[in-house]
Amino acid sequence: MERPADDVTSALKAVIRDVPDYPRPGIVFKDLTTLFRDARSFDLAVELLAGLCDDLRPDVVVGIESRGFILGGALAYRLKTGFVPARKAGKLPYRTLGCSYQLEYGEDRIEMHEDAIAAGQRAIVVDDLIATGGTARAAGELVETLGGRVAGYVFLVELSFLAGREKLAGREVHSLLVY
Image 1: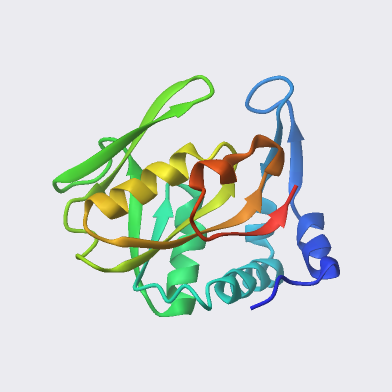
Image 2 (image 1 turned 180 degrees about the horizontal axis):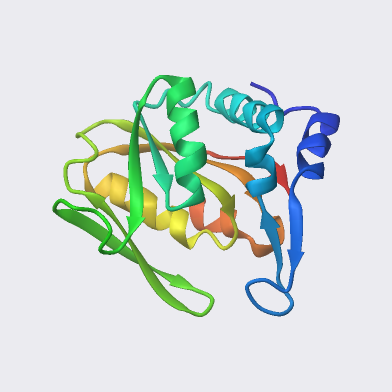
């Protein structure tokens, strides 16, 4: 699918709330809960994200905790695939594999169940927003460690000034709304 028209993306951007100085001074947080609560906007966003996945042919959608669960679950339903959560360390009940990644202010870790991805499965990694790209790259590394193939990365919002896409170089990366 082609990228949606500017009037469509502008309409979606209009329902996203900016929260200044959160989580710390100087940051303008993109609060997507205002889009999620609006049924028409949420449905349109998921439909357009699914369209961006047309050529990726995923077997499974990997959603990154926590807002990636919201989009990932809806997208998996729309694409008729399975859903796999990529969670913060210590949150999954079964045996896991994990991957650590750098944040601007330290380190974090995400995990997946060791049997979450079958060998050769095509996965798309979904999150609400890509900033610096570390979390998405870690999720992709987990998919590959488990024997899967990353078909692409899909984000509702991309903060292009943070250059997170560069950490995913050589991969299909699709963002619906770019700031």
